[in-house]
Image (cartoon, rainbow, N blue to C red; front, side):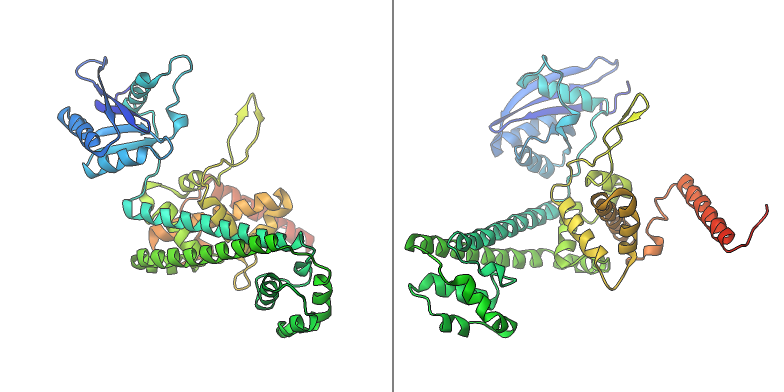
Length: 415
């Protein structure tokens, strides 16, 4: 096989140490190996970089093991050494021939021959933004959990208020829950005075859902703790949002551009940018981007039989955001493009596959918009990446449908 990197290094990273193997190919095909062990402290990582540069090695490959590769990558990036981060499935060692000293050699051997595709690592600015958006996602999930926990705390105390009100955290419902937690007695008339607007019409139902409740002092204390934690999470989300706004100030034009797509709001646009960056050249095409995001059906065929084509588990944070955008896009009232597409696909493939297809269409549109800087235009979405064979197939299908329509109208065209 052709040697792609005559001088390279394979690195096996652990929590407290790493093992590097420099592979040098001179003259013949038989390589020369140098193996050395370093700790993952910063001073030793700089010594590792000096060892690489002294051997004229400027290409490094290492496995993405948890978060242990990040400190090593940071130092290598600062020292100007090209680093390839490999998905573990591409550098998995053969069973029965695996240990800490052999792993780095195996990674280096695969990388030397160009058999290891690199993972997408955005710039440091985007990586920091990604940390904030992912942390915000976790905070929002925690907020939802605490809301459910607070609502369930009243349910187990025989308070069925959530069966009457649409939002347990609206003004009227919040005032009632505060009253129930803080007071030992229940006054129906005072409770009715807390109701606002349209909920006043349901005053009798509200009282009926509360009367006969039983809340102990210990349960009240738990409810207060849950509510205080919920308030803290909301303030933390506000702090994170202000920090994110400061970081994306330079990308406001791109955020506004992405918001022209139906279903994409400001938070969704920021999440998309934090996950895929702003430079689309590193993906090459929208197909590769969709595959990286886990929105492409699998290709699994053996002996003429097609097996499971379900999508991969990639895009842990990007995929849910795009699916949420897709749900909003098919319900958009200002533009029916994605709604019509969704209805067409769902009839044939079902609702779940249809929403994934819409998410992929939106990501394809995002790729084209970030590549060209043009606003969303549904008529030109798929012209760039559509293969010629697919164009011809679609043209043939359109002609066939037109002929069938004319025949139904009693117009026959002879070739």
